[in-house]
Amino acid sequence: MKPFLHRRALLLAALASAWCFALQAQENTPGASVESLLAIARERNPDYAVSRYEAEAAAERVEPAGALPDPKLRTELRDLTRMGEQNATLSPTRVGSTKYLLMQDLPWYGKRDLKREIADLEAQSARGRAHGTWAELAARIKAAHAQLYTVQRNERLTQEILDLLQRLEKTAQVRYAGGLAAQQDVIRAQVEQTGLRNELLALENERRQLQARLNALLGRPALAPLAAPDRLRPLPPPARLDYVALEERMRARNPRLFAETTRIQSAEKSRELAYKNRYPDFTFGISPIQYQSAVREWELMVEMNIPLQQGSRRAQEREAEAMLAAARARSEAMANQVLGELAENLSGIEAARRGEELASGSLLPQAELTFRSALASYENGKVDFATLLDAQRQIRQARQTQLKAQAEAQARLAEIERIIGEEL
Image (tube, rainbow, N blue to C red; front, side):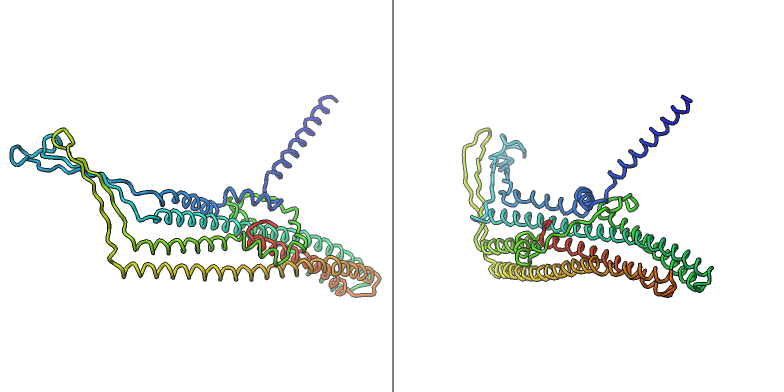
């Protein structure tokens, strides 16, 4: 008896360990919540990594942009034969004289600061583009997660309806055996089941495609496991979806608008730099001259470029003006576009919210009541089987309408958060 109890205890312990391991594996598998997917995408998505590295590279260009050019050193060995008194030599102590020239280029006052400011604005624009890449990526992940939730709930609903039809088929068979119904009722129930099985296959295919799409967005293998979504994000209250308030947040936080604003500022600085190119740049130098082993002379040198090519410079200035005008027009067009997108998505989320409330509070209860009434009437022979199937379809359509409205609201919410550049 004792060995039996011992084996039973070992078996129970093994089952408990396997159950705990399965629970832990399920917890470690991402996908139950959209937050777990976003955390992985932030670390592993290659497109977002590219934009981050590009922003880091742009930030490293700021310091070199405002730095002075490297100084130059020139050495001249003069009179290599000392007027024919010796053979030619390259020794500084034996030639007639050796001239060393140390030169430093100095641009006109303010040019270095402008170049540094332009590089800094370009770095800010790169950071804005990286933020925009993340906002786009996060919106796609949120929308795909909501679609996956809807598809899996649709699968569950279709399976429930299939089980219900199997029970209705048995009811129809009983009534047919008793001579209370036609054989056509049984056949229709079987045809409906076949159609639902085909829909289950289509839903399974759609679920796998969505999982592959999500894994691609996360930077994971296409067939990597994903946990079933257990919930959708709660929708913000209508008071937080005020257009005026969201417009202010959008103008302050939208990544694309931020990038366009920095582009305008960069174009303004580039225009200032183009006008400063009317003035010359200088090169200063100091030159010690060595005779044999001693330095006996010193020279100073100043060099400047003469800005004579005025036609070329005026063309550069006109180019800078045109680029500034283009940047301003592009920013205005972008603002109009995102404002239109914001209004469109606010209207969409409100319509989806009202549609879900209508489906949950009115359409679904009415469909369930209609089905129960039709089922009771069919069992009593008061209605035909077609009426019962229509009532069943109404329940399914009501639940699908509810799921579709939930997914639409989540997609609109993700787009609004992408537009304003932050979570609601």
